[in-house]
Length: 122
Image (cartoon, rainbow, N blue to C red; front, side, top):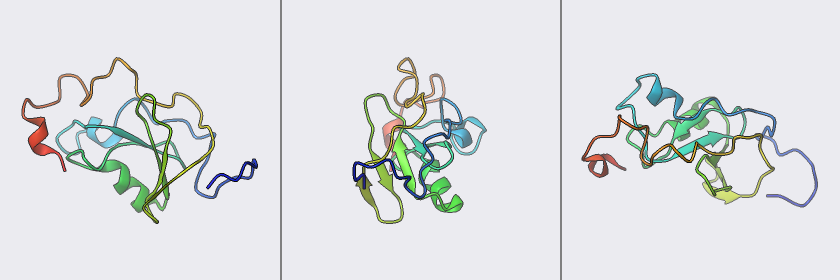
């Protein structure tokens, strides 16, 4: 996707700040309240849980909002995913923070993950 130029990519806003340190909907009480991994909307910064998580809020947000690109919100990961084409791609550097805090457990958040969490994954 990146061609080495600084041309903007439709659907990615490098200036959008992350909405927080965890899945917005899970923290608000939508679903079981925990996640496996986190995803960041590259258009607006919304943080949602991954497709393996019980509630899959990240992709749901992207589709409902018409925001095609998600990126990892996990330490050490910098990939972008296009939910429309179901392909990985490169994208620009986004505003920090670019991941959840390293101190946040996986799965998380601390105190919300059931002992049998693996049984609930997709």
